[in-house]
Amino acid sequence: MQRHEFQPGRLVAGSFLTLAGVIYAGDAGGLWDTPWFVVIPLVLGGLFLAGAVGSLTRTLRRRRGAGRTEPAGTPTDTAH
Image (cartoon, rainbow, N blue to C red; front, side):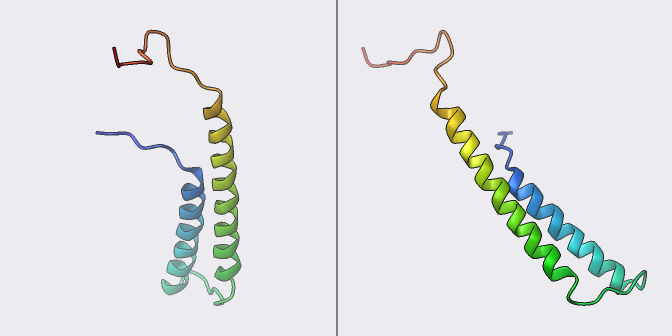
């Protein structure tokens, strides 16, 4: 199985959207009463935070990737 790269922005977005779903599920189940306008700032704030985290992650990966070199013993030129 191939591994994928970790994307923290998607984790943040998924967490906030899951929280919004839990809030609406609790409201639908009768556990509490949630006004309709409560979830809008939660979702928008989560999406904004996810975008900021994604941008920061991309910036850090580009910076870190520019200084990397090939590991020792790895052929850099395969043409003979």
